Image 1 (cartoon, rainbow, N blue to C red):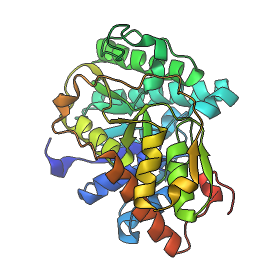
Image 2: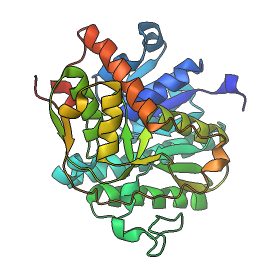
Image 3: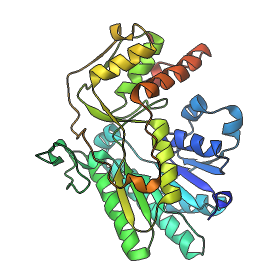
Amino acid sequence: MTGGEERWLVTGALGCIGAWTVRALVKRGAPVTAFDLGSDTRRLDQIMTGDERASVNAVRGDITELAAIRAAIDDGGITHVVHLAALQVPFCRADPPRGALVNVLGTVNVFEAVKAATRAGRTMAPVVYTSSIAVYSSGDVDPVSGRLTADAVSHPVNHYGVYKAANEGNARVYWLDDGIPSVGLRPMTVFGVGRDQGMTSGPTKAIVAAVLGQRYTVPFGGPTLFQYAADAAELLVAAAQRGGAGATVVNMPGTVADGAQLVDAIDAAVPGARDLISFDPVDLPFPSEIDADGIEAFGAVPITPFAEGVRESVDIYRRLASAGRLDAASHGLEDG
């Protein structure tokens, strides 16, 4: 399959990682169908030009409806699927049945739709989807090294993690039963423009607050593995293009940093920010030292230096603020 034959579908395209993935594909000149139930395009608008946005085929649809995702794949002549549609930790906690419907049934529907397309004779790339480090707990690390190894047994501590673990299991069965290859990537703390929801969105909210000159306290300060949203998008695309047979699941690499290092990075980009930004001395219930064995299969993996990712985010937010397009409320902040 040559690059000119690739036609991409991104589910959950209006979320943070979804928007960055759409952007990465458009900049490659690839035809992209953006599939999402929502209609708020602000995350796409924050990181893409008007011409780039106009090149995207937007399809509004519900991932919990198999017919909708099958139609998107068939109508778009899709060859590559990046599946990102999901409800995050707080929303799964608030409504577990809805969380299971979206996160588990929605993922099963994606595999069913790809299976149908394959049986119809279409050549499909491996399904790429986001799992999560939330399939693990802090107790799953190796007791000697303190690291989460690639073969660690998972014990998720919330519904979201359980749903993601179910997706990994279902992906394996779709390979065993139907020969549908897949790559699951487990991010931890994704940050960058558009990361305004979810359990680990606090660091990005702190960047926004600093740009707006507002006070903000990140609700955790212990070390965590950060992934810059632009890097996550590039890795998802590479996995779809280079993933082979089987049902591969790999931890996403990144940079370990704690609350103090986050504040330092923000202050370096926004002088004086350390007087505004603080963090609670709380650890996330997940490992921070994480092996990413197997990631080399997808080629050179981009890892933007942490401070550079923060600075790039600040630059974008400053441009949005200058244009009157940086709204505090939409980032979970009170107006200053």
